[in-house]
Length: 158
Image (cartoon, rainbow, N blue to C red; front, side, top):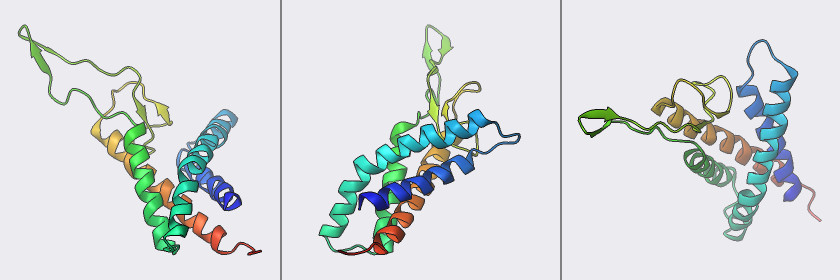
């Protein structure tokens, strides 16, 4: 089970890095996106994926769709938790001035709205960043779940 999770983490890391591929590529971009975030994906897949895979096996529902459903739901949930949602949708009125406190350390993982993952710089984070991060977490979770099912179902049974 652990070998299948490690292999599927490698594939999910490759998909994550491919989504952030920008022209012209640099060695730092490839190392950062594949290795650094790949290590994070592997840690999350081991900490969260191993208990979920054991639960799926214990319930005897180990079909491709169950691994996909659990992994996409977990990926979407992680995307929602780990990203920063936009603050100050409507300005707070105090002393007849409109004030809005922006989060200076906003995190986003949406390859459709940002040029690199991680901490967002100017412009401030928008709802499209937040929803894109949830959607991208769903995609990475789905890749992880399907690849885990592929490797786990084809293991040598001893």
